[in-house]
Length: 66
Image (cartoon, rainbow, N blue to C red; front, side, top):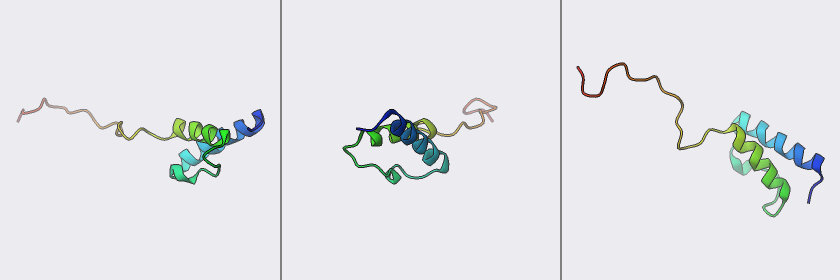
């Protein structure tokens, strides 16, 4: 288990990785570590959800209108 400082650092590292666009597999912590969970939490804060595409411009005409 990590100290509060280690957890805060892992969250910050995860945010930075998300900002850079690194893949989630870039996490440097082992799967059994609380620090991995903290890193992923930070990473998830910065990465868009796959189910939510970038905001597109709204249609100016209704569907089917010419």
